[in-house]
Every structure is written in structure tokens, then in C-alpha cells.
Image (cartoon, rainbow, N blue to C red; front, top):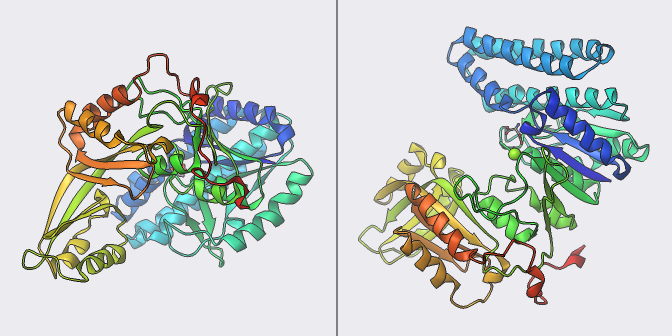
Length: 477
Ligand code: ASP
Ligand code: MG
């Protein structure tokens, strides 16, 4: 069996869902399990309706739910023959009635808690998976809608819940395996789950990719396909650099570094379950199903470029914490990191000197509470509007002169480097620059590091063979 996950833009309207049905139909011999996101932008709209309700703007909240209701009903009626549409419509209406009740109670309490946020957001995937499953049935595919809340079991950390893997595996095995065995396609929403008590949870924005790989790992899938609206993983963001090229093959480690450091095509946690079970993950384009896409797996052939890809993570702040008397006492770093940890602020890069510690973190995680906690024992200053640029590739391992090439390239772009991290990951050179310098730095790096004019990724890759012991072993499981 395989897992096929379709993102929001791949199910945004009736024509898109029609394409999904065709793609899934073409793979039916592989026994797919289908995981879908909410229709494009729906999660954002649900969230802003919830916020409007909590702020007392009940009519704005109800109006936006009315618009969502119409959009889903239209998609269903455009997509489905009358017989199927009239069967689905009452189910959609009843979901929207529940959604409306929930919003009214949020407006009455004027409070949007993490728990009610999850209740609200879970509707997006619930609705899309019902429509997609009806579309499959109408096209003659044998399928069954599966409520993800019954299968993906998590802790109660609402809005960023962590899966309880043993329970989830048991539930997925019990619910999905019999369907797969009789060649019926399970269709479920990604991103949503529930606690052991059945309270809806979500696993973090963009989490449908992660759901798909949890399902794939639980059922030992032959591959996990992430269908999206771009050709695959690219050598850099094509919006920043039009010369960006498709990466046809990439290792788990390289792709995981890129996903954590700004490549938006995959949720950062996606690869973990796949790596554990050594399941290849494909990134494919639902608007161009015949495209090559990107294959992410344990061993990817070395390419002939010095690196595999360049990512940029904007929206970064540097927090500087000074030592009390202009030096760093023993235990200071531990104390500082403990504060970041307590405030759930993930540190991306750390640099320390005799006099202070600098930490690069995601800007939204720098809360007044975090700063107050740090200020209680040390002088603190912040540098907002920074970005982390990461240059990633297995070829970086032990190669001389690459760091010099990277930094002279950035210097040639006239860009100042504020912090550097090298060596923590052997396959990633990361550095912090001002956010406004990202386009210039990335373009220059890309043209210097991918200079070969005839070098399409993949063509000359066989030139350098992987060295034994440098890539993750295939037999670890
Ligand atoms: N619909 C959710 C979101 O927008 C999950 C996902 O699409 O992956 O974050
Ligand atoms: Mg996504």
C-alpha cells in the first residue's frame, strides 16, 4: 500500500478535486490510503472567524462561516452528480450547523482557548475529506471516509499536540488495514486527531504532511506521496531566484535540514516517521502528475554541485543575553537555555563569546514573558527582522574550501553576516543575515554554487559515488 497526501491547493475547488480523483484512480493498483488538507485557505478563515467571535464580532464570524458553507456546498454540487450531491449535502449542512454552534459559544464566552481552536479547525479537514471521498465514490472508486479523530491519537497539548504513536498505530491498523485488504481506499483528513478522551486536537499548522507520514509508517507503506502545487523540492525558492531547479533525488538528512530551515514544501516533522521505517517520500505536483517530482530517501546519489540546496528562514530574531559583569559565569548558558525551553521557544542557532550569548529564534516565539524572564538575571537586547540562510548538501562533509566559497559569495553580494553555525550538522552551513538581504544573498549563492551551465540536477550525479558510511543505512530496520 501507499499513502497519498493532497495539500489545500490540490483540493481547493471542484476541478482540483476532480484531478485528485484521477490521480488516485491511476494508482488504485497500489492500494492507496488518501490523506487530505482542508480546502485552500479554510484553516486561516476558520481561525479568523474564531478570533472575530472571541473579540465580540459575532456577525463577522457568522458571515465568514456562511461564506465557507457556500464554498463547500458549491464545490460538492459542481463535482458530484445529483444523486451523490443530495446524499452529501445534508452531512455538510449538519457539520456547518455544529460549526456555527461552536462559534456562537465562542462569541458568548468571548474566549478562544487552544481547545476550542482545535474544535474549530478540525472542521476544515473533516469537510474536505467528506467531499473528496464522495468525489471518489462518484467516479466509481471503491472508498470509505475515515474520521481522523478516531485514528490519530495525541496528547492534550492543543494546537500543537504530539501523537501517541503506539495507540495511533493500533487504531490505524484496526481501522485502515481491513479497508486496504479489500482494496477500498480510506480517505481521511490530515492535521486533526483527538485525545484518548475523544477531544479534537491538531498537530500544528501544515501538519497534514506529518499525518500522512505517521499513517505511512504505522502501516508500513511502500512509499508516501506528498502532492502539492509545485514541481517538487527545488534548489532554492523559485520566487527568490528564477534559476532554481528541481531536485530529483535528495537524502532524508538533506531534506530534513531544508524542511527545518525554511523550505516550505514539507512540514519539518514529516520525515521522522518515514526515516524510522525507511520509507521513501515523494513530493509531486497535482497540476502536473506526469512531472518527475522529488524522491527523498536514505541514499541519494551525490550531485556534482558542491551543495544540494539553499533555504532561507525569515522572520528570525537574534536575542542577545549579556553576562552580568561583562563575562559569562559558569552555568549561565544552561540557565539561559532553560528559560527558552520553559517558554517553548525553539533556538535555531546559538553563538557564545566571553561576554554574551546570542540566540537566533523564530520572531513570534519572542514573547514579552520570555524577555522578562531573561531580564530578571541579565541584560537583554533583540535584533528583529533577521533571516537564517542554510546551505545544505551531503557533499559538504569534510570538503575543504566550501565555507570560504559560501562566505565570499555572500560578501560579493554586499551582505553582512551576523552569526554563523557550522559543524553542528555536517551537511548544513547556516548563517544569519538581515531579512532584507535575503534575495541578494540567495541569488548570488545560487549562481555561484550551481554554476555549471549544463548542470541540471540529476544529469551528472552519477559522477560522484556515495562514500560508504556517509549516508544513513538502509538496513537499520
Ligand atoms: N489545514 C492545515 C493548515 O492549513 C493543515 C495542513 O494543511 O497541512 O495548517
Ligand atoms: Mg503544507
